[in-house]
Amino acid sequence: MRYVAAYLLAVLGGNESPTSKDLKKILDSVGIETDDERVNKVVISELNGKNIEDVIAQGKCSLCAVAA
Image (cartoon, rainbow, N blue to C red; front, side, top):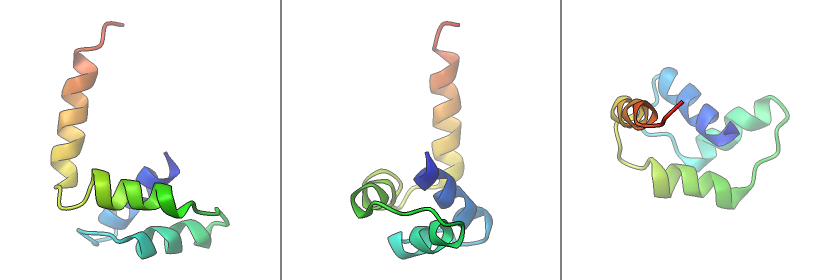
């Protein structure tokens, strides 16, 4: 979750396509150690080239389908 949060912070800060280095810089600034494999999975595998607003909208639709 921390890597996704760092990614969202970078996007909110105006960086439309954050890199692994950007996420590490954010997390290091608050004393959180990073795992390169997980950072790369978030940045490269999961979110690379995607519009974050679209990803959030898709997630909201998925949550609506879950029975409470």
